[in-house]
Length: 507
Image (cartoon, rainbow, N blue to C red; front, top):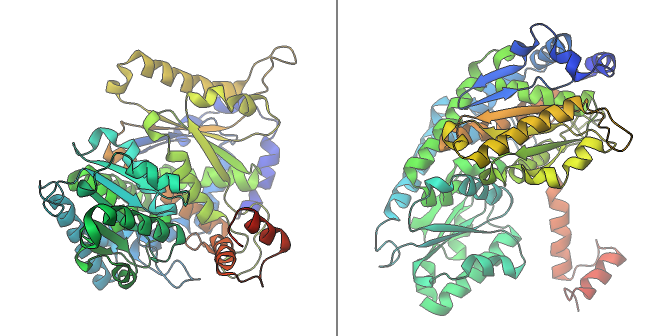
């Protein structure tokens, strides 16, 4: 059974109303999933029990559960780079079959914990307290830490704040350093290769800012690094005692569980960071042990593949009805689009049409209702929506939170049922959505939420037959930018050279 075999189901269901599908006996139980710290409700999707059973058969035929297990064991699951993918192992080294690697992961965590525990000392920075942490990184070295830091604002260490720098625009670093005291500022440079242009240029600029106030030696004492290339970090000038290596098998977009999450462990504290890891481990256990028909991570991968590949819906909107989850869509955008944005399979052959991940976009509710929901309801394209809600009573004690959640519930109903009226006011309905409810916004629930999406990416990759752990597509533009800066004109076209001159990049 392959995804192509499901096309008749999509055709059969194309004129079914979601209201009719909701009435199918047994469907309520089949399309709702309980998982650690959250639940998933897929009843507003356009499929019936027959189609759902066929999707489950696809998961078995593609060996999706086995692929999740292979990732956790540390098998070579990234064949183009001959590497494992170690994000699951970072939060549970006991699952690895490679004992030496498991030992290195444990040692790395012991080092980061000791470093972050010492940061609260009043003389942690050359006799001064740490008051601001500046995380310099881009992609997975920025989006994940920044998202988690914002989401867990209620759990931050008092008296210590983190700022994040990713962009080459000088204003980005200027904003991160605004109001900072060099004496009490710690700069964390996070780069797997320690060759990333944006990160190194911003790192040098931050070092110059510190050096101007404290001298080179003082600046050096306020730098730390997380990298898979510790020799390059040392050559950059970072004290080896403050270089925290991680394995090559830790992909950037999967890296918050490794020393690349150092800014989180430092700003939240090791105990809160442990809770984040614990929530992810609980989801790992669920993804690895729950049967396919009760597995929320596998179900999420299946429904996203159904909408993207079988129903040919090229995009998905993530609507997070929590202000502190505002950055979640951007994080998922990188996780999914960098992992699943492929056009060839594992053997290098072209993938079948639509056998790749969807465009992911979104924002926070209820702001989206006043911007893009008009297009979602009455535009000519259907984009399935993922609603993310907080279900705890403490949150709902505020009337604003109750109104927020009422809007979430209403929007799902409006998308699926629509409204009969005149031509301008009519809403067709029949538009799919899922709802994920976190028990509360805690380190555990956030860890579980992220881990679920990591596993669902593996499920989709297994279904498509692609490699979710390389990202060669991001490299060409970087290579051409280096050519522009170096004066190498051989690989550049006329418009690129003209634009470089117009923007004062080239003389």
